[in-house]
Length: 212
Image (tube, rainbow, N blue to C red):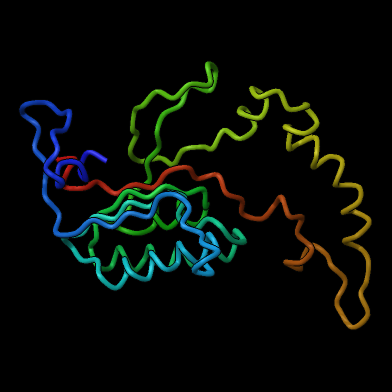
């Protein structure tokens, strides 16, 4: 927001000795752009923005994306988001991106030019600290927030749900389907859904020239 204000010629709150860079272009995908009139769902509107960004961004661009890859089935959305993020990184584009996808956290760990980050949060007081920590991904604190709101314990505790689901899964995984191999430990179909990758990443960020 400060970078966008600066390039619009608006005064920004910063130290008198601070330095800010200027970008040739800024691309922003924040909020919900679904439209009945234009036949756009939430996800298709995001993809339309991603298409424009990938086509036009370069090493002098800044991209700001909230809930990267959201609005569709998590595994497919996460895979497409990773491919888009790879393209941004190859172009040397600066950006700050927020997401919940675990695979993007791994991408940031494994690729030079991308780094994880998190906005710190006091999980005891359930309050934002408004401090950015670079190097580690954050948490969505979904369980803590659910408890603070007052959801029943059996609803907000994922372990209790897994415990109730396990006996059913134990009965199902040994069953046989005609023409198919029985689901078991050696099959990816036989893995309980909670053992697959889940979305715990909260923030991805890449330092921009504005932060220098």
